[in-house]
Image (cartoon, rainbow, N blue to C red; front, top):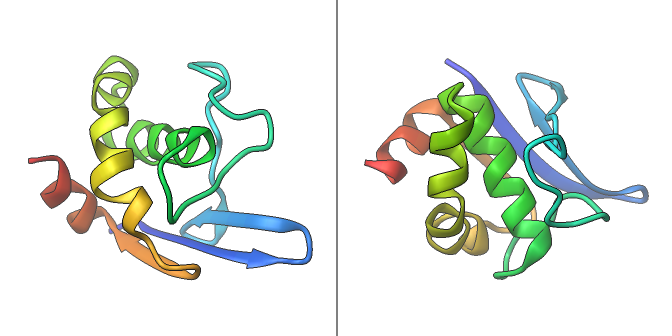
Length: 94
């Protein structure tokens, strides 16, 4: 099961999937030129929502369709340091 983790370092927001950097998926949509953010609603959290969903679902169109709701319901509610499992993402989008 995939594990997604986010935290902050001197380099800014860092998000990984199973220990490797999460692809921001700018190829689908560039909501935020600065990359990922969370704990609020906005462009950085929207980029994170899209990246998490695209990686988890492996369905770009569905990820795009669910991005806004997932950003509001999940990403905006994350703590400064967080961990999400694939099961938790699946439960959130059902």
